[in-house]
Amino acid sequence: MYKYKQKRDLETMIEFATGGYKDSDTEPIPGAPSGFDAIMFEVRKAVGANPIVQDFIDDFKHIIDLRKNAAAALLILGFVFGLIFGAIFSSCGKSRKSERAQKSKKE
Image 1 (cartoon, rainbow, N blue to C red):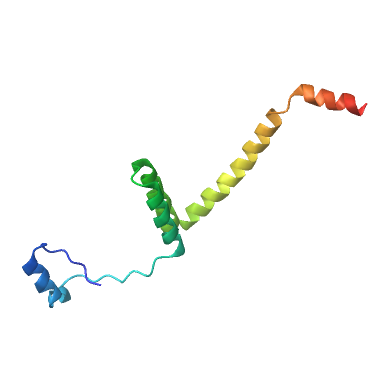
Image 2 (cartoon, one colour; image 1 turned 90 degrees about the vertical axis):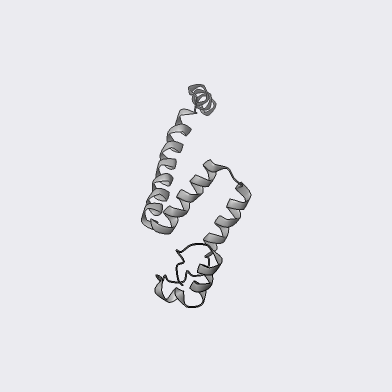
């Protein structure tokens, strides 16, 4: 694949297409979109033009595409902190009255 970096007029583009491309920089041809890319495309279509969500999706895609170890670390840390906070908040939600009522029923 050849990168076109010249002017966007008809004569220059015809010259590039008929042989001028040989003097330009080459790049590898990108592979077919992955399943993840297809899902992200559908999400972007559904979200629309919301710039905040679009920035979040771009950052997420960047992490998944280029920083796979960081994505795994974030997933593991999120799971661990979720367990910790879940345990803390579930113990805070119990009232002492319900504990006393259960103890009195046992006796």
